[in-house]
Amino acid sequence: MGFWWRWHREWLLADPKRLGRWGERRAERLLRRKGFTVLDRNFSCPGGEIDIVVADAAGQVVFVEVKTRASERFAPVEAVVTQGKEQRMLKAARAFLAKHQIAERPCRFDFCGIVMEPTGPDIRHYEGAFHVPSLR
Image 1 (tube, helix red, strand yellow):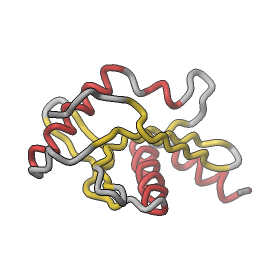
Image 2 (tube, one colour):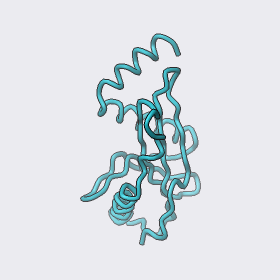
Image 3 (cartoon, helix red, strand yellow):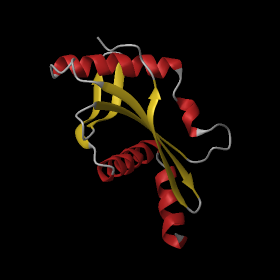
């Protein structure tokens, strides 16, 4: 990716909020290319937040957590999805389903991890990143 990527990477890494927004846009672009339809972005409720809510071709609601990291020197990007984060996502997912009156639709939780490698972004999409017994 050369000079442009090195400059752009440094510019993104200088501001964590800008980096997060950029990562969410990249994840959304990847999900659209995979055939998902975006339902909502940055849905929040007291005690929880979902970065992206999409629907797959079969109509399943997919709640996506996105994390963008400068590197994996200290831990893999996937390590950010802790049990506490899962519980907050679950709370927000329940609120989303109730708000839109679609509690009967099948759901799952995905994770998109983005690592800002010197050669370009490494984007990983994990379907069914964690399991929840029931959202109802």
